[in-house]
Amino acid sequence: MDEIVKIQIHNSILELTFDKLKVELQAHLRTTLLNDSIKVELEKLETTSKKMLYTNKEKFNHLAEKHPAIKLLQEKLSLDPDY
Image (tube, rainbow, N blue to C red; front, side, top):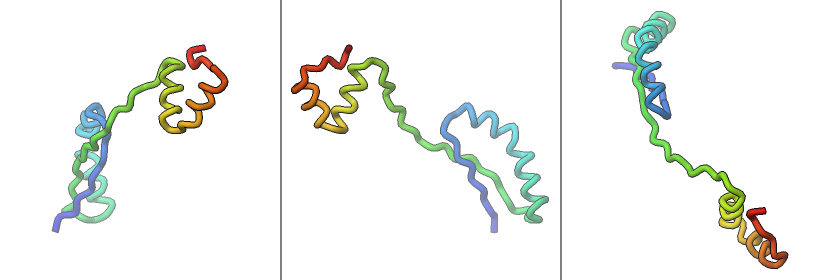
């Protein structure tokens, strides 16, 4: 029975680095663990890129979505989020 070691990565740049080290890592694991059936595989994880918040208005709107009381406070105190 084959033993599979899965390495998880988040971007394709790491895949190139992994490919260079895969053979060496697999050989090291096989000799250290005394198991010739060990295989090392790569597993790409899907990541969702989140929008970066740059302006004060974007930051305020993001917080107001999470905490509606902030929007109410801004209205009552007549605060300008861009300031």
